[in-house]
Length: 329
Image 1 (tube, rainbow, N blue to C red):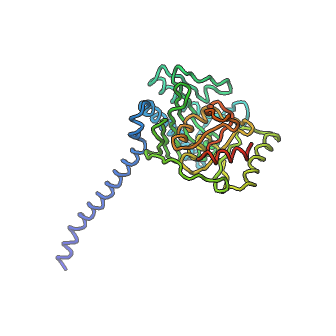
Image 2 (cartoon, helix red, strand yellow):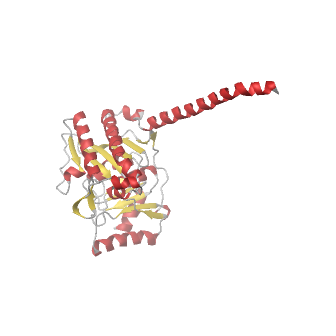
Image 3 (cartoon, one colour):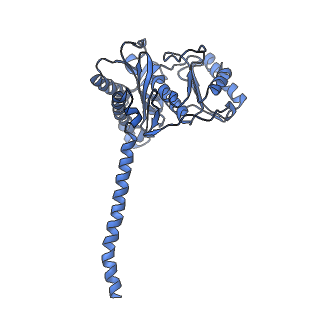
């Protein structure tokens, strides 16, 4: 009996050390996995835009962290101490917060420090004014400091930072960070699209509308005539049949969710209700790199998608895009 007690006495610390080592090992592995999520994938590092991707990712993560505390504290006592400084941009449903402004300043300053000859187009600095044309002589960054601002203010997690790069007038790089779901998307034209360091596969299943999850956005359109037109288009989809419909409130996430297969097709712009280049740029690169098709609703056959278009359809296949176009037009 005495020997058993003695054995137990020296086994206890050994077992304790073993358990402690297992916990430490698990923490280290978790930390490594966390860091790997934010690393630039090898394929992107070998692309012509490796440095641009690294800078954009660093800035997107910083901007995302600016958003996190507010969303995370929504509905708690801590929320009362936040001042978002909401200001309208011409109409009540279109507004920005001080976090939008701070994020855009942070991203723009970081980009100009790294690439002083590049041009910049940002949602908040453009405001309600005329959007500058894309430069074919200089690479141009297109920034949405918070896409899904209404979601952000409401504490809904479907909101993100979007940073896209155009070269010779064409989108070539997209970086999107959704802080509340901690998802980082990176894509470079011809080099694939990635979520948290893992490559997204090409869309392989050609779905019919009756099997599709359909995303749509009503944007800033208001009034009876516009509302009736948008509802009529949605009604035709429902009458035709689909698996279900969703309205996320974030155009950028609409696009990356089609890229990941979470949505099968999205559309917006039935009444030209408000999408801008910063809603398209980064998401279009990500979607195209997974084989998705992106067109304007009224796009001429054979033409390329214009980032200044007032409408969009993005689908996992050409067939589903055309089926959607027929129903909503």
